[in-house]
Amino acid sequence: MEKKTTTKTKKATATKSTKSTATKTAKTTKVAKAKDVEITKRILFVASEAQPFCATGGLADVCGSLPKEIRKKDPSIDIRTIIPLYSNIPNCFRKDFKFIGHIYVTLSWRKEYAGVFEYDYEGIKYYFIDNEKYFKRDGGEYGYFDDAERFAFFARSVLEILPVIDFFPDIMHVNDWQSALIPTYLKTSEWNDERYSKIKTILTIHNIIFQGRYGKQILTDVLGIDQKYDSLLDCDGDVNILKAAIMTCDKFTTVSPTYAEEIKYPEYGHGLSSIVKANEHKLTGILNGLDYDFYNPETDKVIYNNYSVADKTNRAKNKEILQKEMGLEVNPDKPIVAFVSRMSVYKGFDLIKSCIERLIEELDIQFVGVGSGEREYEDFFRYLNNKYPGKAHISLGFSLEIGKKIYSAADIYVMPSLTEPCGLSQIIASRYGVVPIVRETGGLKDTIRDFGCLGGGNGYTFTNAVVGDLEYSIRRAVEDYRDKEGWAEKVNTVMNIDFSWKNTAAKYIETYNEI
Ligand code: GLC
Image (cartoon, rainbow, N blue to C red; front, side, top):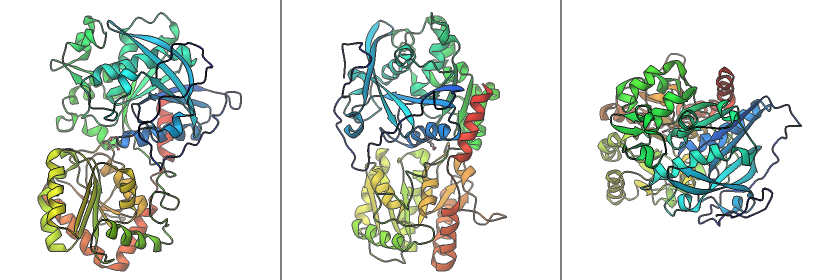
């Protein structure tokens, strides 16, 4: 929605939502004022998605909960979040957005309108950058031919709008390539205002696969960065936004300690391992936490029936309902093996694809899942649904609602990722009582230990990304499932592990303090 006025206090309702999710409720809460607590640090958290406003994956979960947890842990940190005003942000929120003002942003030869709205939610002040040309799109948040331009615009707007929102942060905390131009712009543009030169930056890499990699022509023509910075952004002959951010930020983090190690090696660095290695003195791995309010089987309104570790009677009912809804044989003794995931080669779908038919036939399991992704896997799951009615049901198209219903009813969770920066699904699955099977990589290795480990474990793990090892792990889990008492104990163990943000928020605060 473009406003042609600079009146800062003017109220306006943001562009009407095109999608609205019944599960989302608008809850406005007052943000603690500076006068209540003495503010010791100002942080602007910049992201391309954040729950509950817009989400395509785990990034939104983390960006929606981390600032809130940091604020909870240390109320003297004034942390605010800024994201694009996508048209799919539900109207239940945007009807209460307050228009603050607008500017015109220079992006190479372009001059683009950038409006800013604010909204207080769960103790955090949110800002939304408005430009309909870039963010009013029908197909979701990303995947457009002009994504480089859209997010270059976003990064520049966030920087240039600081005087309008009257908030010059000590630290800007950016996330993934979509906001990663911020540290680079701070270092490569002329800022005739010393408040800009004081800003420090932290970059969090949620997944190094996504780098914002484009042809050389965008450097001056789209990003508006002087040719003399060519080598800063260059990576193997392309412009690489994430690479430049690793070089220009003050610190960077990734979402688990193991992944922080892995990305220093070519197998996991996706072309950036040498850059990561050269900057390792600035790198820390901090394990993500989970929003324990949003993902809580005791209170979750989306699942069929609520339950707790102490009383899982309703969990059994959920299984029965899920079996009915998915057209599976209703039978409490059949183990439901499940996934809730983007269907990508990196999530290990080749491994699943290679053994699942054999397992359905030999082990008499039920296989359910939800997600969308690469064509090859979607086609395979259509075939599987047809071949095994009553035994397999994969819903195509991502739906958090179906995902949560699956978590609240299934028995065994499969996550054989080839690479996994942190992974939240194994944590959500655990919280809802689905016993995870994971490959030992990244955050999966940092969160799940095999039941056979010295001192006990909280799932099934395997080392090598080979079909035989996944298949063996599923067979182990299904065999253990037949032992009712032993299995109930395992479910209790996985549900009792604490993956909340408590420790994580403290680690981020430590990192902010180190800067
Ligand atoms: C990305 C990663 C995932 C991580 C999430 C949140 O989606 O692929 O592993 O949990 O970001 O940091």
